[in-house]
Image (cartoon, rainbow, N blue to C red):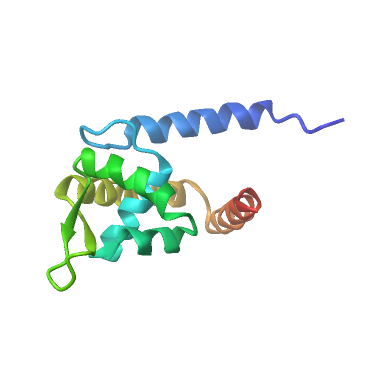
Length: 140
């Protein structure tokens, strides 16, 4: 007989709803995890090209191009022509994009602190280890 995960499912749903309800994305709707990851990458590596983004995420330039178009159209990143080589366009995160990354990091830090305060040190270490195992399993 399989595992009864109904209690976990309910708890996970509550946790997911808490995160979605409390995460401030500003005035932007439709941001996916992929969009967020691209914004954060460009934020950390200011001035990268679309080709560098595609390489970093191990996807085609065509796939990244569609994502970048959405981000540019929504004012989350900007594309500027290189002064040294007019064939190259560098990507930078706008203030709107920086808000999303900074707010997300602040939110994760706040939730992490609250979880650490709720759990004992031993429980927190166990929770962290188990969460790492789950994330690793989901990525494989």
